[in-house]
Image 1 (cartoon, rainbow, N blue to C red):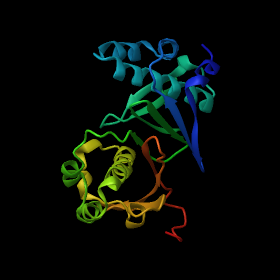
Image 2: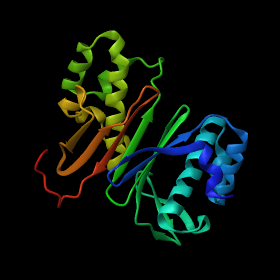
Image 3: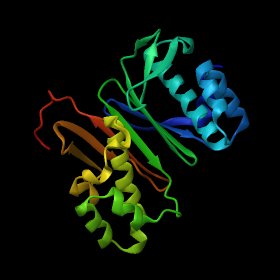
Image 4: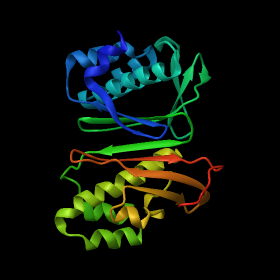
Length: 242
């Protein structure tokens, strides 16, 4: 199957300097899912068979197929030469003919929306979340927000809480995914920069336990979903203007 056959269910969402962010439509579609599965290797198809429910099966197949298409285009390789390994905490990385590919990527999905971020270098994390109604925002917020974030959250009006919660959550999740440690890092131990908590779309972030590393952080949310991206910055870059 050609990459053109995938065009109906993915599109460029944003381009931020050297980062390409692609949106994947995860709506149920038997034809799209069949096309997606044809892109997967045997190891991925085996993983697909282990999913018990249709939704996670569909999310994995569609996002992985689009990721493969994008990587093949970027790296100039055929799909059969592409495979994936994983780091210590399960974050995947690309391999071409068994060798690490010179590219960084991350994938997230929620409901009908998938986001794939791709950059030539630097640790990268992306997160997307549909703003669902079933979450106990105040209860969860006590465990994932730091003291200043909890104070900001408590100060907003009730109808604003959902947007603020998911904005902060996606920013934190993008950072954790970029760092690659999973939830061995307690999200309440670090806080989103104050200017971003109060409306700025972009900022520079440092984890308290590794202040020497700088991260580009951006809110990508729109009316349909909350989303964020985090990218490790080259330490050689000028830090003026932080």
